[in-house]
Image 1 (tube, one colour):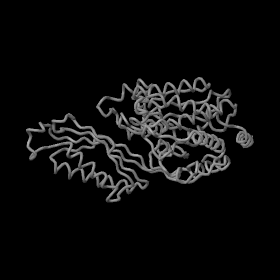
Image 2 (spheres, helix red, strand yellow; image 1 turned 180 degrees about the vertical axis):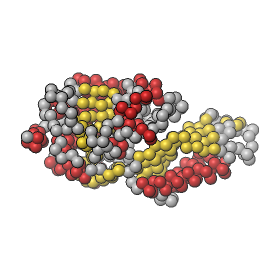
Image 3 (tube, helix red, strand yellow; image 1 turned 90 degrees about the horizontal axis):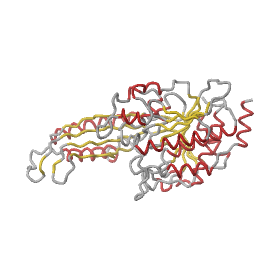
Image 4 (cartoon, one colour; image 1 turned 45 degrees about the horizontal axis):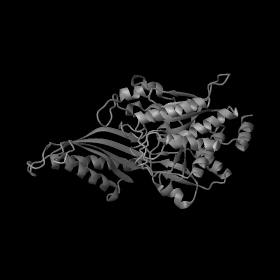
Length: 427
């Protein structure tokens, strides 16, 4: 009976393209800077809370049941079925938060597509073997609170990797911001989903790179997701007057930080220890034109699909930090760190995505993701699959981030058909 149901659904079920595109447009106004067109919805910020409210209101209007767990994740489920049977979840989703002055699609597209698929199921009256669940994971980017993958780590039960009293880049505690978002730091463990409770997890995302655009293929079937190590550093020197303090004997924190920036780039560009290495955030204090910087807070981001190469790059960086600190008379401390190992996606889900794209007449190709995703965390508790659609110009995390409307719609259609295929074939 279940197989017949799925076959019938595959022939007739489709998303509402206009509804999906309307939601993408509406959500893209939240946190938008009129001058640059960029979106700033840092995790747990007021704009992020507004986006979460928008999502939950759309879910309720669709007859679905949204809730916020202790980690601040928005979890959307169908209305309870009459017989009330407990089913494994077939989870879909991504995140709503953005980097500062970022794009409108990174993360948000995957959440809204998951909502659309869930609503399509609700409207069809189909009750698949697995319960379709849409999730907007909290604070994936770590743009304000330097704990990226916060929500998906909590869902996967990775509490040991999260700080007990997290704070933002300015030292303000997360506890109150999490409460305003509907979460509860003291009950964080309740956000975890036990292994076996999720039959599969699917994440639809813009590629954020140029591969699909260059090849002309419309769907990317992700086979692996890069590992990522994010270190937050504090460089402490001694502030002083820029005109009266002799160069000899200065303990300039910004000079030390500049050397860290170059040492980080050197790890990848010259030494080839990891695929990419980036310093993306740097704040000097007191940050005035005529004062030697007394302190700098910065982040280092190391990425590779090989866990051993990433570890070697981190070891080399930590050695460089010790050398730089000694030569500049500063102190350099790692005050926060987040790690996500590279993961492979499920071969079963890869085939389901490929078959769904073929059925829709959409050429596809297998590729790896150079960006990190919540799927990496969920992989601890369930098999994962990822679907990419082309990014115009291959760019992301900037206001110009964009994808053609037809590709956004087709990606959601592939997600729907992959879900339909998966209800009887999840690992």
